[in-house]
Image 1 (cartoon, rainbow, N blue to C red):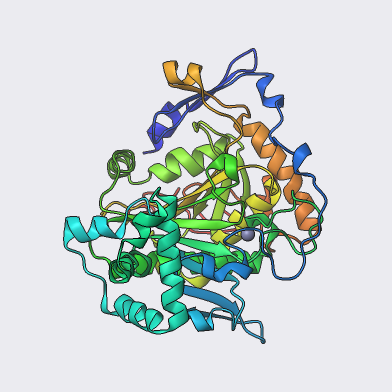
Image 2: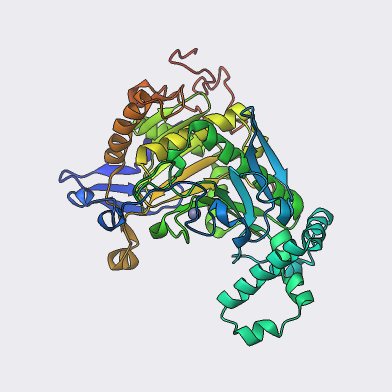
Length: 464
Ligand SMILES: [Zn+2]
């Protein structure tokens, strides 16, 4: 599809400085107008600078480690062993929750977007033997039963039921409602810290970028294990979306770091349209994403396993990170491939800082889809609110053009590398290889004599 690359023009700079962008995958039109990019990206900073000290076991929200019993029963947790290795503990009972400190917890979302009842009523889905065994063991303990009933009670109360109405529901019925905690398909992966260690102001929240690269890899890997498990547990699930809403302006209920996984029973129209594009042009993610970004000098970071660039055609300023791995699904990738991807995602968050509200969105090929799609992650900065102009025209006014976004990130990446706060092995800006067709997700793009552009090499030597 080389021809199409040269025919496409997704980015157009006007003489006055306006940048017109078109998203190659969705057709979204975005304009960056000179001047508006200078608007501040961090809101609310002044009133968040209240002085305080975060010490001991944190207790700022329901996700904090003091409050293991304020969320529905945990499915699993990642703990750090004395020797520095990590272990996953599954299906703990209420009495065991405080025996260890979780680095990350996998818990059900109290208010599911798609509920357990949805699967039960629409698909005759029944709770798995393993989940049922966990449920039985959990409520067999008096403290476990009390915990489950407390959470069901809280949920009913938040749903608007009166005390009398809640009391009129039998314990048996309430315990049945708790099936959604043990077998539902909307889950959260919650981090340990609310604020960074030793924080003295409320703006020092523990974010993806404030972790070490190793801990961020553990976070990503633990999320991937949950993702795989949801597919294995419920065969009616056709797509599990993975995302992270960071800060209230980006849709988060708590300013405590967490990712969400939501199982759905179909592929959405917009996802399906993109898969069809990839069917027509199996190399589209090289052609229109990474190769194009390279020619536009938008690639800002790269390692052996992934590549990151300032993306275009999104309603918000967006950083894109693409896995170079052959395997499309994160759970099928080798540990070093996942680590490489995690390192670039971490570096992006670290370079942004923790004060920009953002959505981290994961894209990959769901198991039932037969079109090759590379695992990629978009980080969208939620720093503006589309309003009337956007509603009428469907042209979105983005405040930062991709080159300005690149420059903001690159400057910080060099500093972070010097401070040793991002992973080793990351090439920055002009150091990046930008080898054409570096994404190997598509088995049709093999390096052959007929297609010398399908480079497999890394480094700067193009072995043609
Ligand atoms: Zn918290």
